[in-house]
Image (cartoon, rainbow, N blue to C red; front, side):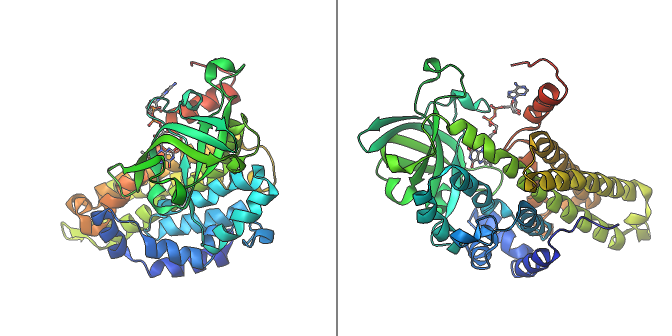
Length: 385
Ligand SMILES: Cc1cc2nc3c(=O)[nH]c(=O)nc-3n(C[C@H](O)[C@H](O)[C@H](O)COP(=O)(O)OP(=O)(O)OC[C@H]3O[C@@H](n4cnc5c(N)ncnc54)[C@H](O)[C@@H]3O)c2cc1C
């Protein structure tokens, strides 16, 4: 069955790089809850994290399909691109809405790896999915903004130099629409930590370097405002299509990894004197996962092509994310079942990948919110909230 294989040269090169980071590497990192620094450095050095940065800022200037190819191959190898995937979509806000001085200051260093832009601060304990209710506030004071508030689930803040932060600059009750009055600041974490920003690791069921952030009168230079004050929500929304399509590609990579592992095991494991894969009770779920994954991959590919053509693709990006996350989760469950008891052992890596891919039912956007968006925006059903 032929797969969609855009950018085969990128895929082959990424697969070769990933081969240097075998299962045992990821297993150890997972056990120790450690950041895969060596892997991220190797990807950075090879230029894969800067594929979307234009050549004029020293990136590779490639399309989203190339970035999708990178992330899919990472996941397909058994690795976890969540350690660094955010750089690919966060920098889009800087690229599209930053001024020329900001782009010149940051993008070439991000492309070279001298600066890491891995942290994206949107979610708050009190707002959850309803982003317009964020409370973290930035008040202008001379040449600075003074930021106070709290964020939660902010991944990789301990492994990033820069944080793209969504704040309220005008409170919700003072604006016409709740989406107004929010702004985006680029926070230099090297200056901020210990000077008004406290980062506290948040342990989760997967190795995701997630943290809570506490802002107490943090001064951020006003020159670090991205775009116009009050328009930040739109800038974040702008980046979401790329984010969803990229995460969907990761899910496709995960699903293919689960299917490869399950097929291999089902061919080799003998029970009752025959390979378990001879039983249709084992083969059909594997075949179904394959069918589901290939169908999802078509939608991911379609959304990606529309994005690269500059066409509106919000619904397609949402559908791609939902289908791919469902495909990877179904493949994970199937793979665990195929492995019987061994699926639960750490040394087979299934349980690790199972935990990792589960995240994509919830983040960066949950399945329910995608369904709600499709119901109201595509099908014209009334909004429930
Ligand atoms: C490991 C991890 C890493 C993350 N990394 C980041 C990060 O780097 N930066 C960042 O900003 N955020 C990050 N997040 C946060 C993530 O984006 C949120 O968890 C997610 O958006 C959901 O928000 P919530 O957890 O507050 O859930 P809630 O908004 O409290 O929702 C809880 C449940 O209710 C459902 N729900 C809510 N409203 C409705 C409705 N109207 N109709 C139907 N169902 C509804 C949701 O779908 C969800 O299943 C991360 C989360 C995790 C777990």
